[in-house]
Every structure is written in structure tokens, then in C-alpha cells.
Image (cartoon, rainbow, N blue to C red; front, side, top):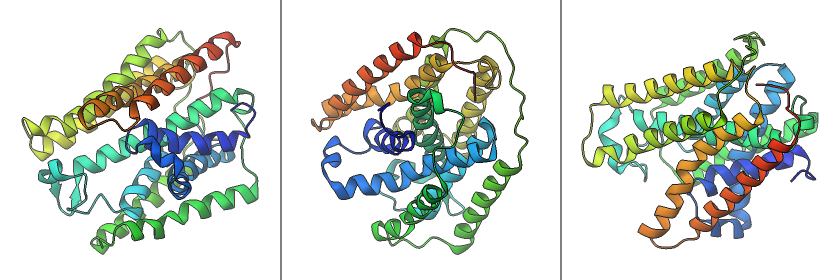
Length: 320
């Protein structure tokens, strides 16, 4: 993929991570041109746009985080409206957390997933592959416009998939939240918080942090309610605390983005993906073979290969 234009690498990686490696879709979907195109619309263009805006605005990791949250809200509240739909197909076990027109634990889970997997993981991996172009924009003006149009086209596609009409105040509020997040990302000081030069811990700690965070998050949301359903305030609040504690610890270890190198970033991404890699093996065993195990095996080898490449190259800059 080093031979590809970096924007194309990200355009390919984002949907692969978000839909195929995550196990949400079986790999057979890659043989359907329409499915591939529809996957690239939300995931590829979303990750590309988040990265491009951050680089053009010369901002840091916190602006990228805000834009990734905005993308998650756009995808799930505006496009498919799963935040609000009480009959969404994947919410059977989570219906007790539907209150005030919103399924809260599902909403938190989808934002968490899109931030870490749909946006951050793809961007980090693409920048490791194209490390010589890490700090520069990857799109021209026409490419940026095409990306915005491509992401916008997902809205009518979402209405074709589901005709559910959410309460209009909530739908408008989602647009207000997206606008606020984008403005905050745009006007946030570029050097905030200030990077810290320090010696980060061994990459294995970043791997374990990513793996534990993703595992605890998804197990508590989708498996715990089968045995004990905590009240809404505890379930939703616990997820917020989990991500807050994880982010706090990650920033301490990474020195606000000023200390960690590619091997630490790769370990963090591999830890988050590790949960889904294991899930794919279990899915093929429990639900019938659908090829997800092959995806996990390929993902493992690719991560190992990239780890070898990263370790062999000189220490890169500690860019956030």
C-alpha cells in the first residue's frame, strides 16, 4: 500500500476496519461492488475528511477527536438514525436504555466505535504506511470537495435503508451538536494540550489499554445485560467513566501526543482491534462459518508485518 496515494490507502483501510475486521459484515460483501461503494461512502470519506481538516487547520489530536465524535453523531443520528429508532435491529437487548427519545448506551457505543475504529485506527495506520507524508494534507481542493459530497451522499442512502422518522427536535439537536463539535475543533488552540517530551512505557501497555478498553466496553454493553441489566444512569455513566479513564491514562503515557512513536500507536490500534479479531473467531464457531476467521488471520499477519516495518525504520517524529 506504500505505492498507493495516501488518501487511497485511508479510503480503503477505513471501511475494511469499520465493517470487515470488526466483524459487522462478512468478507463476502467485498465481492459486491455496490456494497464496497456504500461502505466507502461513510467510513472512507469520513476518516479522510476528519484528517484533512485537521491537517489544513494545523490542529492536533484533540481537534481530531472532536471531529471523530462529530462523524459518529452524523453517521448514527443523521444518516441511519439508530440513536433514536426504538426498533433498530441491533438493539433488542438494549431497549431498557431507551429514554427521552434516545438509546443512550447504544449511542455511546457507536460514538466510541467510530472514534477509535472508523476514524483514529485508519488514520494512524495510513500515516504509519505513508510516514513521509504524515504532516501534510493528502487532498487537493477538488479532492476535498469530492470527499464532502461523497459523505453527504450517505444521507439519502441511509433513508433508503430505513424510513424511520425521528422526533424532529432530536434530529435538529444532533445537527447542532455536530456543528458545535466542528467549530470547537476549528477554533481550539493548535498546541492544546501542550505535548510533553518523556519516555513512554513499553508498547505492550498501550496494547493492553486498547484491548481492555474495547473488551470491557462491548462486553458490558452487549453481554452483561443478559445476566444483569444495570440501571440507565449506571450503564451510561460507567461507559463515560471508562473512556475518560482510558483517555486520561493514554495521555499520561503518550505525553499528550509528544512522547509516543509509531510502535506505541500501532500497539494501541492493535489492542483495540484485538477484541474484534477474537470476536471473529468466536463468531465463526458459534454462528456458522462466514469467513470472518480468515479476516482475523490476515489482520494479525498484516499487523505483525507493519510492526516489523515500524521497528526497522528510524524513530519517527512524535506527532499527535
